[in-house]
Image 1 (tube, rainbow, N blue to C red):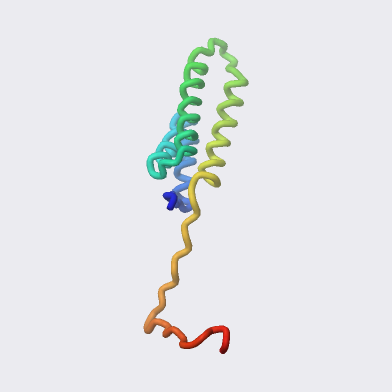
Image 2: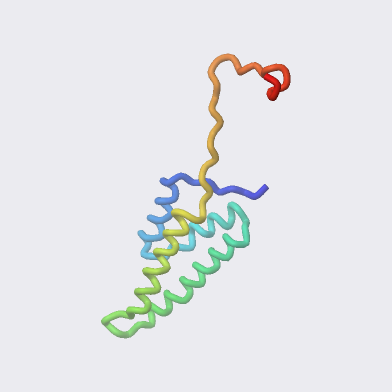
Length: 118
């Protein structure tokens, strides 16, 4: 059976807040969390892609000598942050399994006989 990584909306929003609050610098952290917890290849691939993103954009941003900024860098950062938010909110976590209803009092007695002949 595959490992599940369940999260409610509060935890999902907290992970998105971490990614957006750090201006994209800690976007790889939730994906590392998922990769360690589940161990799926796709989770490790998502983690590796966001680490590669950090390794490319940080030197790109530091090497920019113009005072007006780089519009392609800004577009890449915004699109990557939107993609990470979409993955964190809707794609990465499993929905919690429905809980069984607990019965108060005496359990229901199984009925005798064939259910199709009643």
